[in-house]
Length: 316
Image (cartoon, rainbow, N blue to C red; front, side):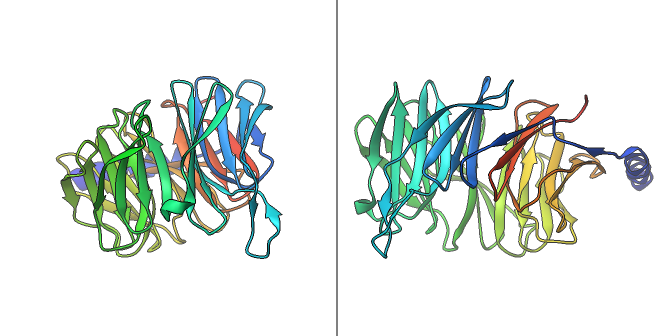
């Protein structure tokens, strides 16, 4: 009987599926690696060494945070490639690549740019996220998780959580949990306070996980194995098979709506996490999608390996 219900939902989803176009487009000065939305502002970090700040209502660039340029291995002056960006209480957290390939971490507040960690620390950080106004989480390619106190310039802990290369991290909305994935395909839930592993999920991916998204207890993964892994509380994990590498995933705040990059045409495919039903597609990206972020159940933003961030509304 349950299979009949699932088949019914699948057929209904297919019958009423439609293609959705973006409602607005934001043009950064460089290729966008990461972005964050706060209220009516969009902060986009790019490979030209700037965080471009947009007014969401007008889609216009209203401000920029510029990092100092660096010297390349050929002694040419080039922009600092920004890998990740985050925001909390008037502070912008910026992670960039330094001259030697190691990372620099910056905090921008009250029009002042302050370097928190420099490349002399020889860290290969892949993502940096705020835990609170003073503490940040740093996740390295070597699968080290570091909780750093910016006010004291001190690591509260540094813990290696995997023998495999890190794929991605996501933080829960309350910042109490870190969702970690790696090239083995495994997903771990980690306690932010002490780096203890709370839970391990039996992997739905058999290869490297590119991205992980988390909300309301639901985990979604994007895999090199063309799989979208889905993990839900008190339910059996499952995966959706795609016909192409899945580079990116996203999830709505309720955890009910999942989305993943689908096919060589860089389409975003929506699905119901409970019923596994695919329905509408978001069409408009021209390059490989690297970030998807919901702001509510009806609105999301996504970026690709180009200059553009697209804004979508699921019902218009």
